[in-house]
Image 1 (cartoon, rainbow, N blue to C red):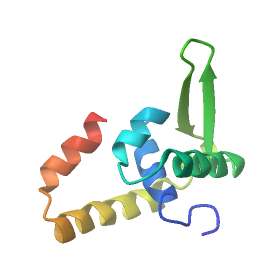
Image 2 (spheres, rainbow, N blue to C red; image 1 turned 60 degrees about the vertical axis):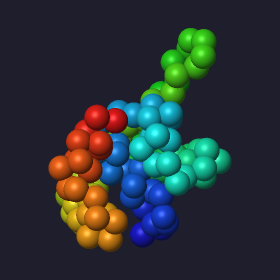
Image 3 (cartoon, rainbow, N blue to C red; image 1 turned 45 degrees about the horizontal axis):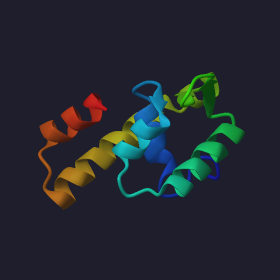
Image 4 (tube, rainbow, N blue to C red; image 1 turned 135 degrees about the vertical axis):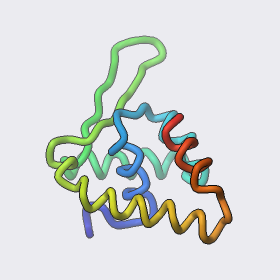
Length: 107
């Protein structure tokens, strides 16, 4: 739990389980997170070997995050947590499940 605990790490990992994401894509998918918190959580996940960070040498610089092989070993656990989280959003916030899925997949 030390590695994936906290408010945002599982959310980040749920988005990365669907594929590589750039920093700004993750920020858009999580409007409630501050840039500082996102950066901190990404650094901690990288430090723990769960995700890897790839920086492209261009202007402006582009940074992508992806699950490592070690991080991918969490896939079954994350799938269950992500599914529960989606159902929770639908139940608590009354969001249509199909719209939620579409929003996640389009980002």
